[in-house]
Amino acid sequence: MSKINPATKWVMLGLSYLVLIACFIPYIGWTPNLIEISEEFGLSGAEAGLLSSITALVGGLILPFAGAIGDRWGIKRIILVGLIASIIGQFLFALAPGYGLALLARAISGLGVGLLFVGPYTMAVNWFERERKNGIALGIMFTSDGIGTGFALYVFAIVLVAFGWRSGTMIGGYFLIAVLLIAWIFLRDAPNVKEEPLNAELASSSDRSAISWLFSRNVLIAAAFFVGEWGIFAVVAVWMPTILIENAGWPTEIAGLFASLYVLIGMITSIVFGLISDRLGRRKNLIVLAGVMMTTFMALMTVALATGNYVLVAVCLPLVGLGVYTGMPLALALAAESVPTRMAGTVNGFVLGVGFIVGGFAYPYIMGAVKDATDEYVLGFVGMVIATAVLNLVCPLFAKDVRRVDTQTTVSA
Image (cartoon, rainbow, N blue to C red):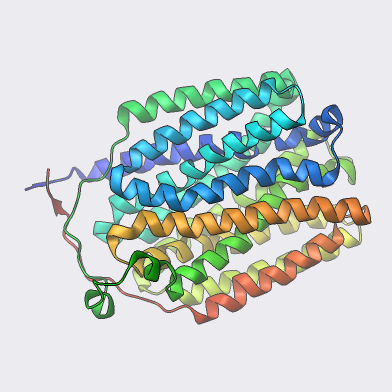
């Protein structure tokens, strides 16, 4: 028996964080050029939305399996395979001569994105679970949404504008290769630790099947929360730059910057409330508060969009993000804490996968279809407000706080 160097878990967290930031290039890094891509391929709004939706669909389908496989074979392997798939999709998209091959490239990228979302988050849980620090670890990891989105929609947008979307996409592929080499050399899985019971109920429920745990209350509520959150994120990332470019006449880089403020500002609450909830041992009330914030500011943003007040739209984006990133790490942490430790990857994959499939796929596609049918986006945003109220406010009211027993930091070498 020996003690793990306390710094090791932070190094692994940092490497996982780097992987997540890189993941946003194949996920949304192309969206600031959606108008140019649509014109080149002659796409309708629904077809343009499908380029993003197919990524989310494939990613969502692979997420639950990735979590379960990672729990058995090692999370590092999942991350490396995800990076390889993302690299293939990135270069194929850059070279696609038509819409069909571009759609295939986005699907392959979705495979990589799905693996790269479940892998790093599970890596963080596995390293910090033994010290009951899931809230702060996941809070830090979710700030990668802000850094990654800002990097993809603003910094990478500058590359796309300077080199064109095809050459810029290839540059993104080279960056992913560099991250692959770093992860392959330095990243490693957390050592195994003897599992401790979560609480009296779980300690007496060792015979429950994996499926029954996935359909337990807190896991389903977390999945509902992520459907609403990921739906908003997908629409903001895919359509908000286009809305600000087409309707408000903003430059591509500025539109991308303001769209990324949704997560750049939101990451503040991600860390703060993750730490607070760890200290309190309570997460439910903060998740409900997050739902109130999300619903309120989504409604205000919809009114601003309907009245053509795009400055107010831009102001509301980070306010919505504050609510989203208050609730996301807490909802995922609550789900992970409600099941045996050995199922952390499976639960993370299930929750993130449902969010990807329903929210990430349906929202941007439906928004494009609404735009085709009405020539505007307002009705689509009205639907999002209703969905946010149900999924992110009402559902968390039925969550149940859980407490873990203390665990030891001494593990097998």
